Length: 112
Figure 1: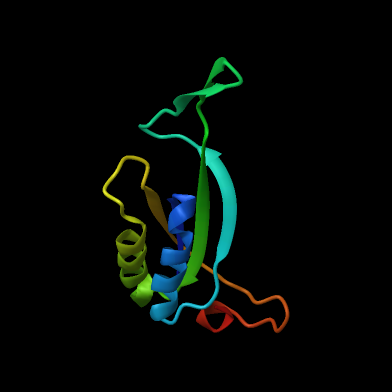
Figure 2: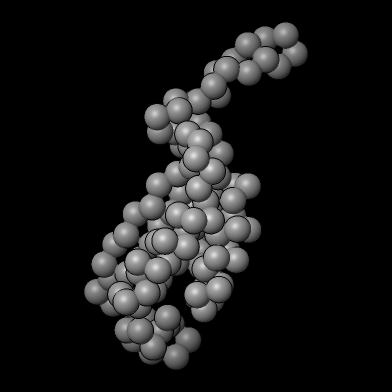
């Protein structure tokens, strides 16, 4: 099993959800986050004062998949989140030793 964590632009969340659902992946966790990478933020003007926005709003999508679905899920996220512009995000893939469904006690891929 794998945990796929993707940091994407908020405007691409619906596209990513649709791409993952076409693969039959049902569950995901979505968190609003802030951060920066190479884009390092930007300067904005508010009520005549200039200030630096150095933490950019992003969305973190986490999904757990069977190991054989991992590359398909990553490809689906890349295809749905890619705009070709700076700030598209990153994807991290982690191997999971164990997954447990609290309600039923199911373990492993049955718990997904």
